[in-house]
Length: 210
Ligand SMILES: O=C([O-])CC(=O)C(=O)O
Ligand SMILES: [Mg+2]
Image (cartoon, rainbow, N blue to C red; front, side, top):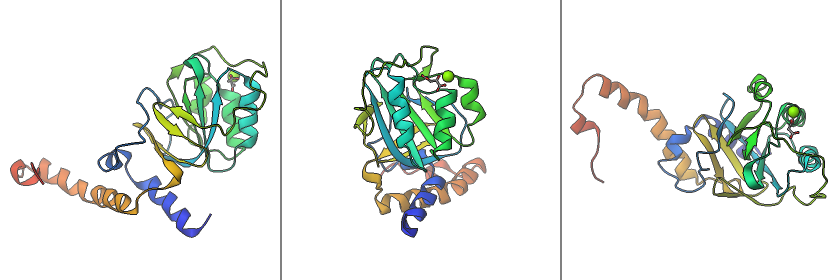
């Protein structure tokens, strides 16, 4: 990872996702994929898994492929089986992964919360219906592009997450002007809030046109 790269990741860990929402329109995952853990801001590179069948062996293949700093991004066809729970989460952490995003449910919720400082987990909900050792996917699902909450994701895309949900940046890129505009907005907002709280005229604080 270059220094520039590391600085970008650091900046993305600091910027507020809702601030990026003022400047970016695409890439926000549908809010039905929501945080299951109370974790630090998530920033990492996607490692995708397209679970067309609820095949537990294929989940293990994705875990073996995961690299430090990655986020497992899993689409669950049918949305009824949990591919992630206590064992998966611990294995992901052992591989250095920083998050898991599932378009589908997860399980073992208590265990997921115990490791929430190290692994952010996003999902559509909870279920006790888990994956099975069927081998149905036979190694065909890791690194396949997926659509998660309406957003296409490929291995190597940047995945951001906070308490509000998940944002995907295709190709791991963000327009530097967008990032600096968001950083400036974050810097300026506390003063605006203070001025509103102090009773300053709203007409002078809230623009109503360009
Ligand atoms: O095997 C699964 O489907 C998920 C699970 O329970 C775990 O990771 O512990
Ligand atoms: Mg389990």
